[in-house]
Amino acid sequence: TKVTPSQLPLLVRNIFRRKGKVDGPKTPQIDLVNRGTPIECQKRSRFAQLPEDILLLFSHHLEKGARANVVQTCRYLYHLLVATLYTHFSPLEFWYSHKVDLLHRTLVGRPDLISYIRSYRGSLMAARTWYTEPPPKRSLLDKLRRRKPVDSPNPYTIHITETEAFKNAVLIFTRATNIVDLDFTDYHDWASDPIFAPIKTAVFNMSLTRLYIWNCTVPTEVLRAQPELEHLEVGWNAAGLEGLDKRDIPKLRSLTGTLQDASYLVPGRPVERLELVERYEDRDFDPNLFRTLALSTRPITQLTMCIYRSWDAEIFRKALRIASQNLPDIEQLTITVEGSISGQLILDEMPSFQSIRRLAFLDADLDKAAEMVPLSEESVDVPPGTDVSRHNSVLNCWEDLLDHLKPHCPHLVEVEWTPTPRCDHWPA
Image 1: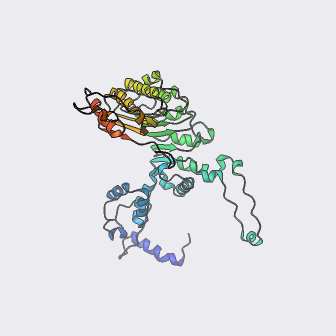
Image 2: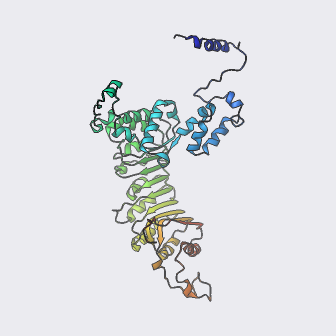
Image 3: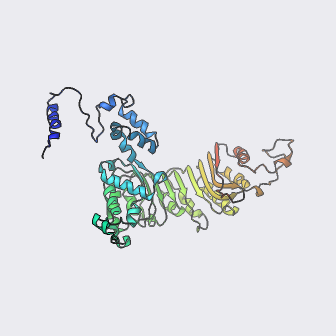
C-alpha cells in the first residue's frame, strides 16, 4: 500500500513503539473490543476509573434513552456500552416501522453487534422498505433540464426475496445465534412458508427459552427444535399442536394460549403459569379440557382467564367453579372482565380457591345494582347490635368487598382491580 507524506510520521512512531523506543504520551488507540487497560480519557475521569463490570451494572439500571446519552459522552464509554443498546428490543419501547428499518440498517452496517442480541420482539422485516421503494436519483443534467424522473417500479411487483428488507432480515437473524427470547410481531408465516427457509433454519439454531408464535400453521417443527424452551405464547392460526410428543419442550413452565391449545401442551409438562385467551366465538369453558390441565407434572399456581360475557352470571360462575375444581393449587388468579361483575358472585365462588393469595380483576366494574343482599345480625360479618339496614350496600366498592372476602380466604393478601376504560363522553 502507498504511504502519503502525512502518514509517514505516524507509521514511524508505530514501528518504534513496538520496540519500546518511544517515550512521552501515546496517542490513545480505540478498538471495537472492550479494553482491559485504562486509556487516557479513562485516567482523567473518576467515573471511568471504575471497573468495567461496575459500569456495565450501572448501565443496566438506565433506560435505553439515558444509556444512549451515556454512550455518546466519550469514546471509552461508547465502545464499552454500545453493545448494551442492542441486547434487548421490545415492541413496547419504540417499535415503529421507520425505527425497525433504522435498526436493521444499523445492524447490517455493524454486524459485530448482532451477536449481542439476547431478546428480539419486533417485526421480522421492516415494513417501510418492503412496501415502498426509494425514488430514482436525478442527475444534475436532468435537474437542469427539469425532466421528470422515471417512475419507480411498483413494489408489489417485486418478489419479497428481492427486497432490501428481506435481505437485511436474513443477514441479521442468520447471525443472531445468541437470541433466547424471540417474538416476530408481524404476520409472516416464517415457519411453513418456503420463502422464509433461511429464517426458519436460523431459529432452529437458536437455543430459545421464550418464544411467541402468532401466525404459524406448522409450529410443531419449531417446538421440537427447542428443548430449552420455558415460556411459550401461542397466537391465532396455530395448528397441529396435538402432534407434539411428550418429550418435546420438556422444560415448559409458562404457557399462553386458548384452552384447546393448553389441553395439548400442559399434560406431561411442568407448567406452573397458565394464561387462557378466550375467543369471542367460544361458547363456554369445556370441563373435559379443564381436566387435562390437572395432568401437569407441577401444580399450576398462576392462572389468567378472560371472561368477556360477565353480564351472564351463570357462565361466570361456571367458569370459576370449573377452575377451582380442577386447579386447586392456584395462588394467583387474574380475570379480565371487560364489564360489570357481581360482588356477591365473587363472595360465593372465591372461597373455593383455598390457596388463593393474590386476586386481580382487570377492566372490571362492581355491579352495584346486584349487591343489596339481606344480612342478619347472626352474620359473622355484622357485629351484634348493629343496624343491619346500613350494611345492605356494603358491597358497593372494592374495598368493602375485600374486607368481606378475607375471612373466607385465609391466605389472601392482595386484591387488585382496574376499572373498565371509558371515553370522556361516556356516562360515569
